[in-house]
Image (cartoon, rainbow, N blue to C red; front, top):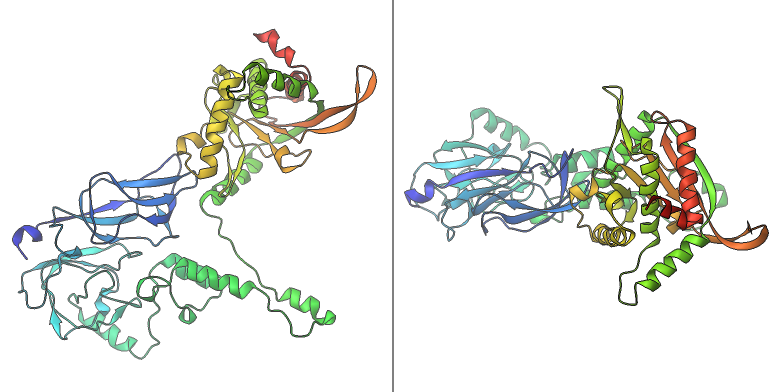
Length: 487
């Protein structure tokens, strides 16, 4: 290996801060392999945060020498993602290992914890700049300069994975204490092929014996998915050969349990809702409303636009009504600064709307909703809904709402007492619209009726303000022409 290659600088790229308040992300899919050449700003990994799916670009160009984190594993912000040999010869193998008998020049060894258990002596030698990496899931490396030593063709496994598990089998200098520990370990059961401490903790918490599992990762590495499959298999009750009614209670007691980690989006939602209930003294008021007039107005607006014009959604009309109501009752477009003991009223209205996706509940945000027409609101709501479904919402599109609109009528329910989207001061819930008997203009008729419910922070206003807001919204739903008074 030439001197220029030995001078290649290995740079570590850590998981960057991907949005407001994010502390970790889950590795969804690696886009590069160890040994692959990457360019500056090339996406190298796709991660899922609590807010969105994001492709992370690498700020360095060179050869990928190690990746940290298996697919499905969570990494903290600031934890290593991968290392790149900047300026390395792209035609050389990753890690810069050379063939047998290549000389004894000093090399830089990236020695991972526990690397001293690698075997020594053997059929071939490796020298030069060598990276002791475990590939995907490797722990952060510690670098030191050593003299290369002979390597056995069948190196002793490290953490259950052969020390050649990245691309090269090497044996760094082993201190006397490490040799003694390795000798004592020969009389203990063999090592378990697990790298990630998160996988070990998940197995320990659920009583899974790792030695009984066959890993699906490289060289038999046990991944999170392997442990989760074992948990699910253990939780599935076996069907009895002969049903016995008397044994049913005992079988139910022994059915086991499945533990689902509160992480990612689900964890953030859980924390936010818990904080909302813990901090906000909320109250709810509701009213049944005749929505026949609103539905008729929507049909007329869409008919006036022509067959090729974009259609205005019902949610857009409700959002437009909410912005008009917030202009009349600004107390509800606010938040509470608990540390300063102040109510902060907000001049701009950013409406969030609850959207159920395969990833869970998300709240995309329509910014500056107060300045938008019904047609503009409908267009933006449609765009954000599509992005929510395909997981392409950015963190900025999921933060900063000042008031939330929750249409739970799509689930076929009439009413609810929604939890306020912290740190907002109110949320309007809308139930399904169904035909019901209703007294209209003094006569009994079948009308399209819905229930509106307003949950509000009792610190920012009293019941009079909340009731006034809800009544104004109800009046606009029943008689959309009421909105014209503010035009």
